[in-house]
Amino acid sequence: MKRSITSAAAALATAISLASSAAAHDDGRESVTPKFSQAIANIPGKTMRVVEVDYAPGTSSLPHTHASSAFIYAYVLEGEVESKVNDRETRRYKAGESWFEAPGATHSVSRNASMTVPAKLLAVFVVDTGETKLTTPIK
Image (tube, rainbow, N blue to C red; front, side, top):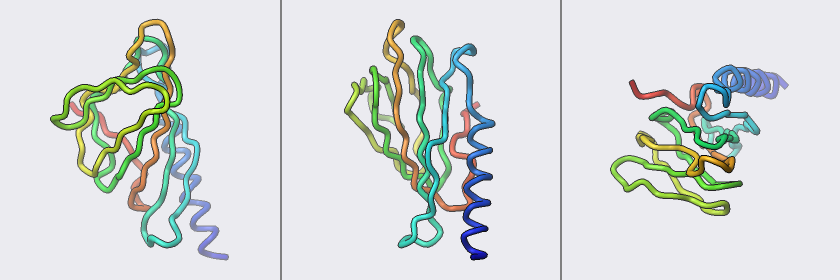
């Protein structure tokens, strides 16, 4: 019982943290919505966190890194997203396509490829359970 209360409290804290860091479309940035957070029972100390990233036409994310423990799978749900991770080339991903980001990766480009059509992606993180800040802008 105590463990489930602790897990619930951690999930709530994560959701609040993610929700408070969500950006609005009117500032030219993406909108991030937490969708799921669950400890992974057979991998002690790891949690799966899922966020939906909405890009209005012409919007982008600031260059950023993710939590140092984060393994990330990104899947484009709608539209087209341009992405550049580390020293790889900038690539355009269409709905139904995906990519992976390893721990410590730098995500220098993440944007809607269209100035007229919205884009949306689902980002699945596997992170250390204590990691609550999933994204850090690069200054």
